[in-house]
Length: 313
Image (tube, rainbow, N blue to C red; front, side):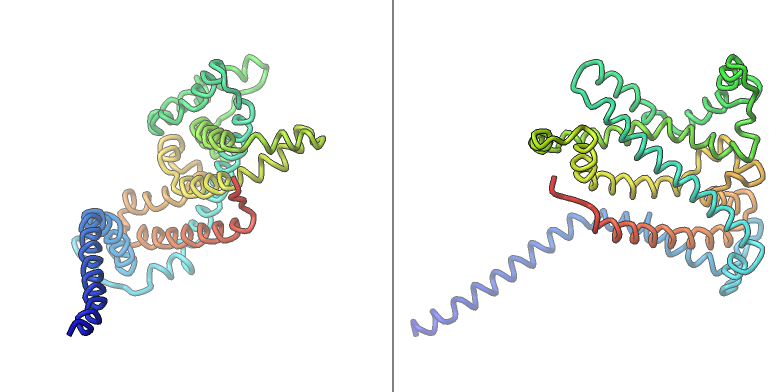
């Protein structure tokens, strides 16, 4: 009898362990259940609903709508919507490249310039980073005055230098640049602070060893700083890309998508179809297509960057 009891004890212990683990897992799931419910209501359900609406002819002027299959997709890729989509994709890509260059390039430059632990440089860093706290809508209103053709302060300074006035917001060749000026003013400090925090984590031993080997400042920067900052660069690249593709407020306030659709980015195009033309069906199909683009480009960026990112730091 004693031998049988001894043989049964391991099985009882295993069952008790499985039961305890199941209870623990149930408690963990209960803790995250409110977050899952909120995600389902405010994230997943809207995505499913937008996909559904893209297969209807929903116009906000009418009380009813019906399913029309792939009619909206045909309008987007083989109808009158194609040229507007291509224009918005081009404008969005140009804006995205500009914001990435400003945030990464300008942020790294300012980080190298202000990489000093002194009170003076701390104040300068705060001044550069401060625009990040200004709401985009408030900043855009201020830049409406700065970039005004007749009374703007920028054209006033150009006039003192003997240069002519520039129609910053009314000219196709300068409208997108004007939006990027506002973007750079707010974003460059953010890139600077992210790079500065990463630079402080690089071991000083690397620089000392390189200096003993005869490496000059440029070689130390190129061979040590740049590779060790690659995880930070990847983070900034992905986050800046996603935020730049979703630009809306600055375009809405400064240019309203003009002149002649020269600043009509994708998100503004969606807003225009939904809230100005009242075509929720067309706005939804553009939104779904835009969502797919973001997923694909982000996934490709992460996959390609894995080969060149160094996580040794």
